[in-house]
Amino acid sequence: MTHYTHTRLGEDRRVTIPAKVCTRLGLAAGEPLVWEEEGDTLRLIPCNHLLRDVQAAFAPYHAPGESLVDELIAERRVEAARE
Image 1 (spheres, rainbow, N blue to C red):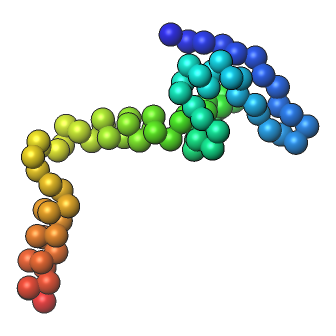
Image 2 (cartoon, rainbow, N blue to C red):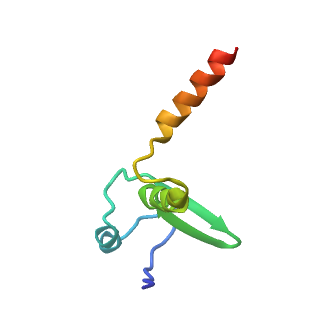
Image 3 (tube, rainbow, N blue to C red):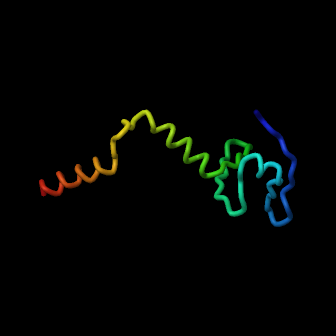
């Protein structure tokens, strides 16, 4: 569902996120956010949402129970042994 909320760009170019939006999205003071600029549109995205989306995009390439870290370490050991 799309919500539209009115706010203003302050004199010092700061944007205040209304309390009701923060509550709805579970945002707290100090929350890391990312600005996405597309054409003449700005989107403000909580970093944890962006991380969740990236993890979901890569999930099909990860087999359950498989440790990518262990696999990388094993590959590096094989390479080191060859040197």
